[in-house]
Image 1 (cartoon, helix red, strand yellow):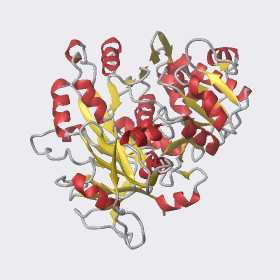
Image 2: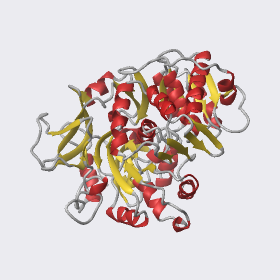
Image 3: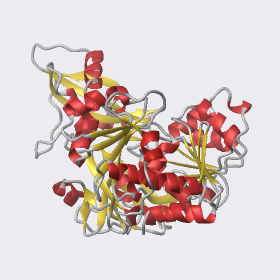
Image 4: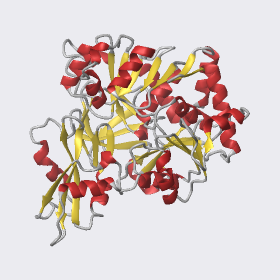
Length: 519
């Protein structure tokens, strides 16, 4: 189970077919494999050894896909960097993973000095963008052109393939370790679940650093398909790509679907090539889905539920359940059934499975599960027990095996498809000199699903405004993690008998009348 075997197969079966299309650059599958082998040689030449971590901080491009497979081909481990994180957060993940090589494009080259200042690990910088190469960096095209292709290092199975950083319950990001095995098996399954036939044309509209896009990307590679990249999602950019290149598949979060179908110029473009939209990260509203199905009548919709720890897909709501009529109606609130490569259960506080229809903790087991959290044995032990990954989501199974999400058991907010752990927000807010206490919760948002809301108690005699708190947070953490609203209180936070803040009590006024405590 070597991930690199997927591109060798694609080059063998479709040597002249296009592997990547990005702006005016196009490469066939045979060219892509050669470039991958040359990049692997170039990385080895600058010091990458088997198991070494290599990071990339860049918008979507053909070079991002080359990075993924070039690092793996050369025996390394990929560490995709979150585009929305602050330099301090990215420096933390670089040092935590021991990453010495970083690829960066022109969009992020300007913050590299600040990352370097905060990092003690970085040694080699490679400029993989457009335009002039900044001082102190190697040029991507130059080193690939000069390198000789090397043999595949042959890593696979339980060997570490990637470290994907997510938010942390302690206020610090944690690196999810995924093996070749877990990614290979998960995406072999996804190829079927996402309705990808040989020769599919996959549009990278979601950010390529995110494993959600990685699910679509690796599935498309299994299918020997074409990867079409736009730098980042905009409705106009995606519509133009649909018209120019005819992609058949795309993965979007519900917010993107809403922006796409409500774009005033939607009807001016040819969208007829689009066969399947995969969506996930948060639930979609019925109104948006009905509108999208109406405007894209030829397109199937597939909902995926999972998390990074599951490589990342655990359940699928298939296209036939995206309907408001007939015997399959009534499933839109569900996130579907377990994929063929895992099993799931719902357990109570005693660890035993609960009866059908009873809310409990969702746990997943199978070859798609993570190896654990990088250098965090305690957090690994909390989430990974007897081969089961405990997701932190509360839900229930119905009598036909459909899974429904009801609540979040861990302190997490999902805003615009991104996970935000309350501890990270609270740590940032309480660094403000006027703040004595803070509790961060998720509240319903029509646009983002959930938005971050901070409840703050100020120090005696101190003063601060909502704007002060939000601006202060933007200096410390990624923008999507920052509070969008701040509520000041003088009374103490509600506490449990153990002295923990009762987040459910704080959330209750905002979620009254809702069928579930997630949005």
